[in-house]
Image (cartoon, rainbow, N blue to C red; front, side, top):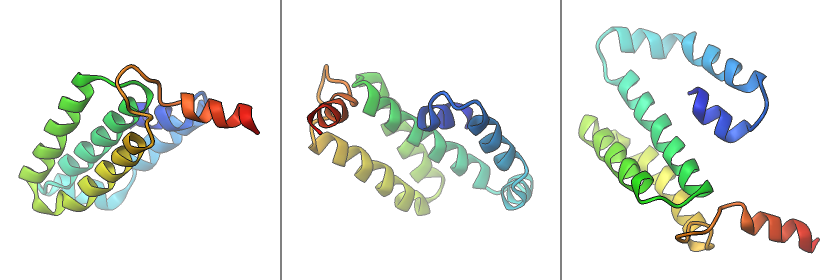
Length: 119
């Protein structure tokens, strides 16, 4: 959770602490995870898939694509309801790829730097 928050918030030192504390004290997540349900595993897999997608946005890597694929497959095998979060992660990654930000050897932030310089 901390790495995902750092990928989104950047250098903000309070954001990871806030996200980790909200996750640690979220009652339904704790309750159903301790009851032996797969909610905790699905939460972990969704967060890790999002982290892999953010890594792919920053830097194209075959390893990150394989990790994202294995993570999403593990989520689907855990529970078929995982199709909805899988679709949102894949649509977000596909939209970045369609706009050229996930081409091999490119950085995801080059497009935004171009638009900032143009305005």
